[in-house]
Length: 114
Image (cartoon, rainbow, N blue to C red; front, top):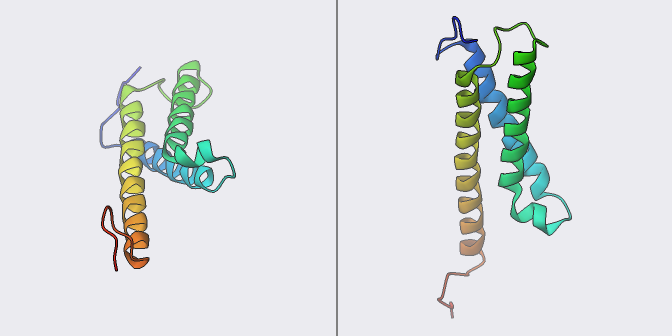
């Protein structure tokens, strides 16, 4: 199942980058939809889609659809790390975007500017 599966292999970088990208892209798309429930949970939507794609790839590996040695727990860890880094990046992006927007419009929390 995991013969010759190194932690620092090119395959792990591909898993990391793909899950990171899918999380960011689907989070962005969900944040632009007209449905408020998706907009409020856009990062969660990106995570769910990305982890589902990663899990489907591992199932396909195990069933022999791709030329690989089978499913790999290390690939799954790379997927989770990619999603986690994307969540941190998106959370920071939203924090600074909304913080700058409230500062530029003169709004602060609990203090009214005169």
